[in-house]
Length: 434
Image (cartoon, rainbow, N blue to C red; front, side):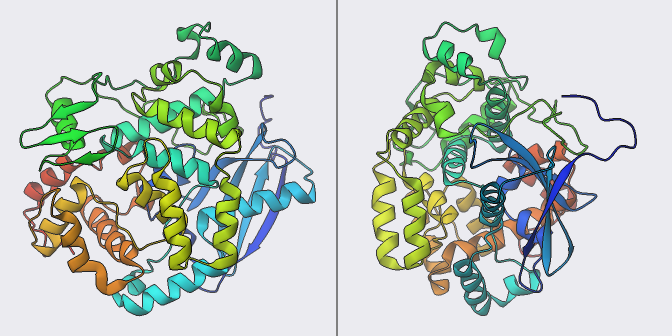
């Protein structure tokens, strides 16, 4: 890409999206850890979001968009490095932005109904939960959330985007036949070494990685975290090469998030090695292949939600379909359903157990956590997840500061260990944090 002349404005097309009065871009984006995961880049100074989005006319081509809000009635979407767009590409880009920010009529209704039930969330302006521009990206990122600490999740997402930049047609063919040079594709982000095992014996129970289920009181991610602290895992810094300035035209050295077509032909062992994905790589490749082969039609799934709404019958059907996908356990399914606009199920893990203990003074284990969340959040049906997440996100921001104002290098600091450290430092308990 040619260097931009000093003082010369980059070519761009400006698109406009009308939004409801009172819409808050900052709170809509900075509402879930998905906004921190590459290729999303939130600018704390300008309160704007940048990332690449794909064109409808050529899905292999991505253009960087810069999303900002000058006032509460519209959004400006600057499409960089182009002077013209077809109407079809304009609409496709706008639909991706609308999906990320949940600007549909169904979501507006959900937000209003939830905030009637949860006045505290309304006062804080919470109701939208950020998601990806495509369901496939959401699914893959939900896989990245499983059984590992947050810094590693960030690192894996970045490594996938680094690899995508190099996924030219001839590169994919070489990788699929395992003839590619590993060093040529190695992402810049350091990887965490993962022990080759399907089952991990914890202190009090047994964790099954394949089914994402656990019968003990200590979950895998907590166990791995302790190993990272004592040095038995190589610690990864997902932000070592991340620039703090705006991303323009992929100058930061990463590409878009890989599409199903780009992942489907890759060898899963190659993908695991290059991006530090471990067992997750096989799940991603199988998911991508099922989409490319037409066995799983994501567009039809989302169209059904748009036409029928997030009604119980559609929820039951989708929950059943998702549970049949290779490697999709309860935690992943619940997160994907949330991304699709269903908030009835709370994805429970060790963080849920910590939250219930700190905020609600309820002690539980992996065996009893589901009954505990039902006891606390069932009064918010069908928005149990929104009620739960409004508390969790508020707790994070009271502990670490406003996520919308964090430098990117601080994202990796949101860990259980640092929560405990902050508690000791500030001398505050859970009661006066919420």
